[in-house]
Image (cartoon, rainbow over all chains, first blue to last red; front, top):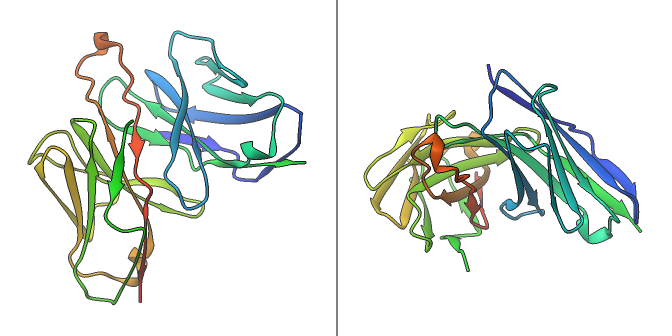
Length: 112
Length: 119
């Protein structure tokens, strides 16, 4: 069955360092991989996406990489700030349907 | 600015009650979705709709029904609420991508969520 895994343990990072979150998938050929941010008690908010034929995408302090051989995406936040603390979700989108397949999310805590 | 609204932020109901959760989007999106989110389980799709009056079951449709009479509105109905339906309910909408060559990702836009407690 299709599966997406994110590290279920919270990631603690010192302010100013780079935070790296991992999203692994199996049995799937995604068209896109999307990253969302979710704050407590709120709905997810779209951040960045990367296409199947792209290796890397950047947006300000955010960078996403996509390795279809390893079936993995990495999400980087450089110069991290306490305001970056949130849960980050990855989601796969297939060409064949309207749905996104979601990871359970990784909680990121940036310590001042 | 893109907007998805949900009828309530917090709701408390009794076991056996019929519960209506309503979602409205102002982006003229074809697709609408209902998810529930529980700690450690992530987002689980209950139902989605790709057009008015059209619906498809997601991963966990049991105990739920939906209605989409207008393009902008998607309702989730709990026919007889049970305690195991206590959860955060999230509505989302997106454009529809019809072909591989359209090249457009179907980013989802979420409402603020409804925290439902069934006693």
